[in-house]
Length: 417
Length: 102
Image 1 (cartoon, each protein chain N blue to C red):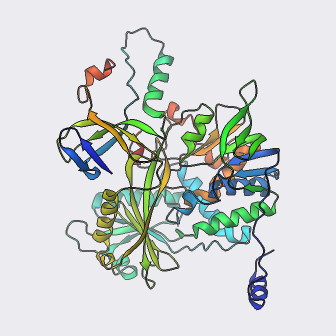
Image 2 (cartoon, each protein chain N blue to C red):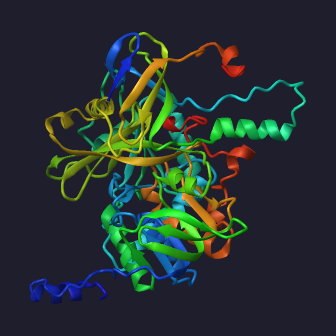
Image 3 (cartoon, each protein chain N blue to C red):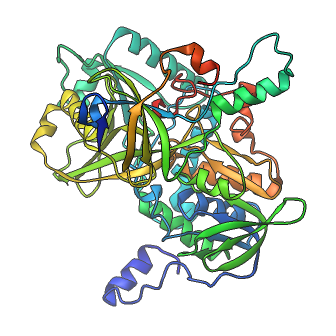
């Protein structure tokens, strides 16, 4: 069923009883050309681009729970391309351009809303760093505006400009940044991939790899039986090390918990995304009215999908410092997701040393904004056996070569990225 | 999550700073050791970048900056956040014994 104003009107007139399911629920076949492990945004986007751009339609996406039940449903829905290092700038801008046409491509309302993202600065040094990043972005054809406090005050009058400790001196604005509805992104890619012949198989956990006598991966063992595959792609951020261990691989990745928060719903208050520059705090308002915010990792390795109180306190302190009126709003929900923290804060999209096994991992806490581009470049890698030009630097061997892409300059300490 | 420091007793985890997995050991390497440069490079690559990233009990370094300022080794389950043991880290802060393999 193609979604349009007419299908909506037709369904409304019949009491919304005519909607059909958006994707099939097939039993796994015995063989696929490509099997993708992980039914999150990245895995489903990969399947969509394989079918749509590269003509490979005999594809399965295997998900151990239900699609979008991992980080795709746990993030803070921010999209942006305000990066400063070669490798990142082009890749994330490609992703932003894909966000801008995603809803037309998928025939699905992903509620992409380019309401702007502003990174506040609080010192002269920080202003200079942001000016440099903004210039880098503009040289690369990405929009960026350096605003001073008076300009921001017109748009965001409620911020704490004159705090003696963290005065707001200005900010770097990317107006094309914003938010998207995270679940709708998952559902949109699932539906579009399914329409192009991809099998989405839920409640199907991969328990091992099938290898031939040369060690090549030729399929996967799953909780729903053995599935043979021409190629296997992993898109299981959070659990990458566990799945890689089944193939005997050790990776430059640690799993860490990141918490996020939603307040009770209030009337429209915050026009875009705001980030505090003197601590780690970012906030936006969802279309339902809840304030969506978050901050730092808890800092210790975790697979628990839940965090602890010190970070809750730290995030709320950040919120109070930049926007004191937030103290009058009650927190509604809080949750944790498991981040694939790589050793330089940048993702890894590459062939593995094992034939037939491909890796899409290490998204740290920036995976959501990358969903469309990650799907496109991973599909390119799976289809052509060579990296997409925009992902040519995201190689697994870059740590050995000393070619890290360390946007934050923290070195090999994943909990600091 | 509360951590039972062997010197201070049970404290909330905000007092502690995390370093990470305690199992990687800095390769014991001297310039004139005669080892092949490739082998040394492999060993350092493994030490600096690769992690087991255990799902389950893991030995890890914590620093009690909000208390006795000792380095500790805890055994903690990364899936449940449950601690099995917390002990003082031997040789931590003394670079030479650690380089010699503890």
